[in-house]
Structures are given as structure tokens and as C-alpha cells.
Image (cartoon, rainbow, N blue to C red; front, side, top):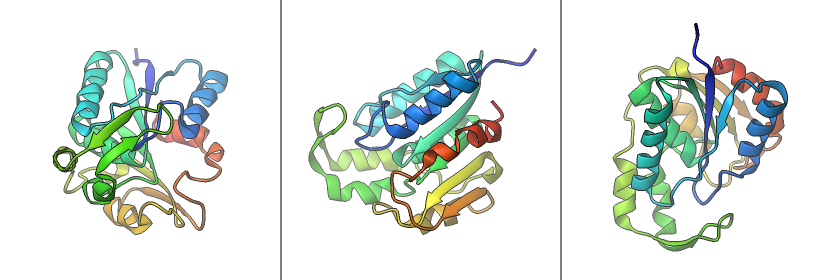
Length: 194
């Protein structure tokens, strides 16, 4: 008998488990695929702690569920790392490819606009991110890249290059939030084979 399905949604930097894309995926599953267990954890602000939480969740569920990932921005980077360890299929939405470079501009005090949590981002946290870097993706066919070219936060070409060989949907325009994400949950679930 096949295992039940679990969707793990991994949000981005200074985002939340209640972000728009997380809500879109959750609402779709509640309405159309009630058999899928949906997890949208609120990740700790620091990469090392986020890593520990994700590993704890995988350890808890991987024996009993088929796990598929949706990762947005920094969550896309974390999805690539989880895939390298466990082979989970992943849909990555405007993923961060080099967050240890990107977030240099954010060192210092931060406030998460969703949770109002205050914290200080330090150089050591860039090292924690670098430790999660996957130099080369072994199984690009495990990924679906959903990317919009007018992403104001990330250079979309980094993801296109990193995920060559993956299924890619690169849309002209849009922004970092991925405009009209509501078009995709059914196809994402099908791609993840959940």
C-alpha cells in the first residue's frame, strides 16, 4: 500500500507560514485534495535553527509519508538542500540561489513584518547558509522552477542556470511574490506526485 502524501511548504526570508503562496497551497489541498497533509512551519529567523527544524520534521514524517516540497525564495534554497539529502521532489518559486551573498545587505537588526519578531542577522548566519549550499544538483528532474523575470529581489537567471535540466516555467514580468500563483497549485501537486 502506498504511503499517504505530505506537502511541506517552506517560506522565504522574513516571511511566514501564513504567506500568500502557503495559503494558496493549503486552500487548494483543503478543497481538492483532503488526503494530503499540509505542513507550513514558521521557520526560525536563523539558518542553523531553520535547518534543525526542517530535519526534525523530515525525521518525524518521512517513514510514514511521501513528502513533496514547495519552497519560495529562501525556502527554494532550503528545498534544494533537502532534495540533496532525501531526494524529495520540489517546486521552487523564485528561489534564492546564493542567499549568503544576497543577505549581506540585511546584516544587522531585522523585524519580520509578518510576526514582528526582532532579531539580529550576523556574518556567522551567512556561514550557516553557505553550509547548506548544494554545488551541483544531482537530479534536476526532481525540480520544477517557477520563475518571473521582473523579480526585484533576485537575478532570475541564477535560478535558470542552477536548475538547468529541471522543468522550468519562466514568465516575463511579475515580481518576487510570483504574481498569480493561484494558477499553479493543481499542477504543482501533480508534479510532486502527491
